[in-house]
Length: 109
Length: 114
Image 1: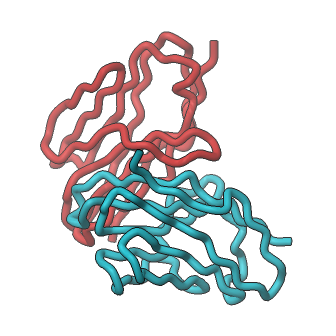
Image 2: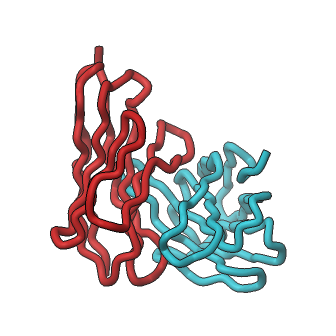
């Protein structure tokens, strides 16, 4: 089976840095995805990690440790438009990613 | 412009009625998926299809049916057997299905019960 855990909600201040954690237990591993979803809209792809380490893409970075079953998404220089849900999805043995419940990030001035 | 379209944006269902949600993609993707999203919940997989004329049940397939007669199209029918259909429905596609491909999502259909 698959178990993916991420915090339900986080708040942060505009201009700050926030780290959203995701822990997982899966049978098999084919990579970990992060998606961003604004309220009432479709999720959009942010990052994909299959090897250990940090992947940086502009203000967003994603880290993976396969031995610890752990990933985080790091958002720098937060902007109001970053207020959204952030979904962690893990590709396990079934070849279809399983999604966590998502972390709702609220950015305030 | 390539992408995934879903229609309608909002759909109302009466008691005992079957309704069909449309999903079309022009990305030439082989794999397509249907997810259901409820408040405070992640995306739950209803059905998926790796190739034309083939589809598989996901985690919550009861009360739903699908077809995949064309590569571009993967409609979802919510039957009267689905007792709690109010939710946000998302269709997605990916190039293949090895677990390593990015999924591209449509804008979603919000289904409400009258």
